[in-house]
Image (cartoon, rainbow, N blue to C red; front, side, top):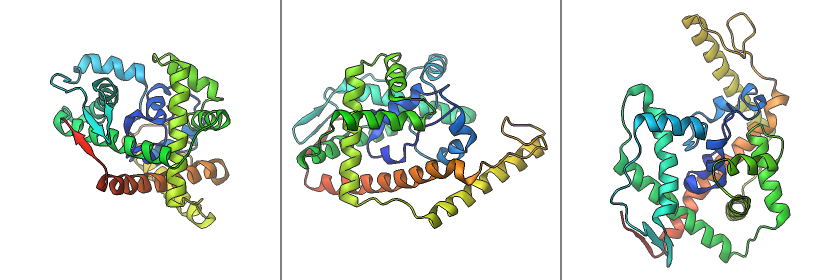
Length: 281
């Protein structure tokens, strides 16, 4: 299953289109998985790995998050309220992911800690949204289409239309999806402008590729020791390493996304210093 890059969304939280789509993207094209993007993203917040339907099914078996006592509004940022409904949508996604990641250990997520984390993410998201608006950054139709196409590519889908359809199956309207894509474009454009995000050099990409090869080698060794096999193997028990040219674009996007994530966190922290923020949890 193809996962989506979400490092840059750590400060943006699960409300971003990227994070929402990741929950619906299971079963998308397999090309990105075979080229190694799954290994690259396993350490990310990823607040959002996994298929929404499968997660909902597992969530039903494991119990739903406790949203009793959550106030409305959950927070207020410079006069803009973050509603309980908005918080609940983001929190349920985060809870599902936390449940999946801790499933092997048999531990339930720490809901108090997770609620605070999600509330902070939503506050940061709102601060960045307000800053982008103040900077006069507005997404046009072409910007929205390109954003959706980029998300489609990252998820092994063929076009932005597939992104829209995938999210419509999760209950979102096309209008809402495009609004979310517009917000994502504006936030990313603001972060790129504010932090002067640059494309990685060839040297940096080669270093990333070396790390990727090492991950594949370790995976192959683990398979050999366990006697298991993988769909991406050479038949001799070792996992095939994708060619550099096949993953170069993904590595470049990953590097840029990581820069954006680090920048977003710092920018949001700076914005908080002069902001009027109230969290009611």
